[in-house]
Amino acid sequence: MFSDLYDYISLLFYWRWPSTEGELTAVRMLGGSGRLRLEYRFLLGDGSYFGEAGRPFWSVGTSAVNFHERFPIGQAVTVHYRRDNPSVNTLDRSVWQDLEGL
Image (cartoon, rainbow, N blue to C red; front, side, top):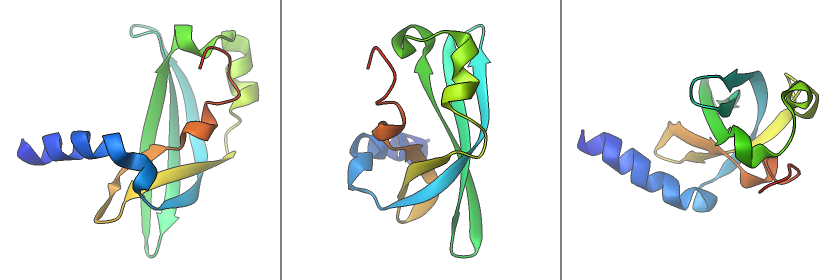
């Protein structure tokens, strides 16, 4: 439980973490929660890591039809990861910058 709290709090300082290039593997619209979720993967050394990031649908400011055009599967994205535990990671804010409402 304490490690989960540490992981969550450490995400507040993600911009200080090292970054690498990853690729989008899925784009999903979560109906019940009203969130757009991007799933991605990246490679570090001998390991492959996965992550997901999301934004509320209303903050994205574009129609659902354009999500797959804006975020095509295989698109390169910048991923920040915690040096001591790369499974704790997040997308760089630049992924969302071109969308309205941010």
